Length: 140
Image (cartoon, rainbow, N blue to C red):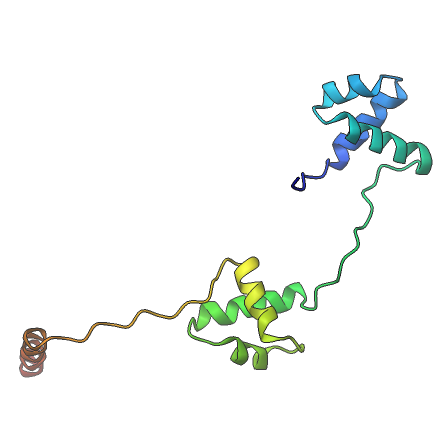
């Protein structure tokens, strides 16, 4: 089963106010449009701690700051053919090339790609181009 969105602090406050008005968990869930288990968990936490705040979650902190992330994006937008190794050398913090690629793909939607090669001119196109250029040169 996938993760669902967190209930907003406003909705949590509404649930607690209904609880203080002594409404049942089922009625609160129907009024607020959230599952009974969610209401029960919020009410339980409020009864124990007296707060409805969302607790900080565990997890490894990011090694790059938002400023570093913006710098990575700016470098790629400025020069699209730059490699992650070259970006790594430009950054003030020590970051792996894999982290740079992950930030680009996850946060900014910039997947790794190679610029398309331009097709070569055929003989007819080359003659036309030379004719146009020589005509421009004679006008000057």
